[in-house]
Length: 195
Image (cartoon, rainbow, N blue to C red; front, side):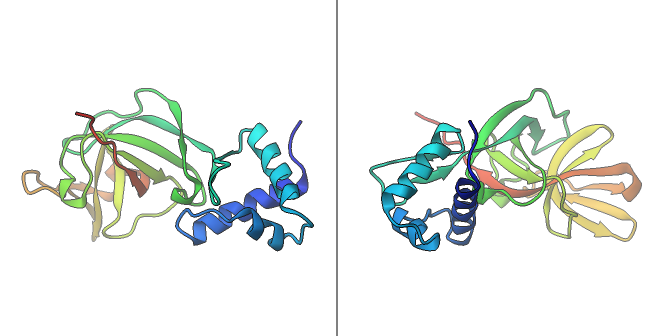
């Protein structure tokens, strides 16, 4: 069936609001006032349509319980240690919209412990942006000799230093022409073990 122009505008308003307010959603009253609608029940109707289209989830007993549903590819495992092949398989996972940035985003599962001093542990999920250019100090996924690794990026002349965040690992130095940055880390999702 699809959504109306007004419903798309409401969805965009919710996304912008969440981005500006650390993931907190607008209330139904705030949506009503922003769009100069006559009643909260009108907002409710629009949100029901967005929910039926699979674009949001709504906790109806919560004043600000709107969750934007965004799926990005989880494309495999990346080493936080010695480089390994990534992109083993592709599945899609839902990520809160406020964790994403413009352009193409994807996720990888971390394997290893070379980035523990950055708070990135074995089993964590990292969200990456494929369209940003790296700057010194950025956490990146780099392809070196056909293998992927998660490290901090530093340009030193025509060389690139990939710095681990664990004193038990040594930095990797490569010529600029021998490295391909696959993405820059923009968010982390911690996976807690259940005991």
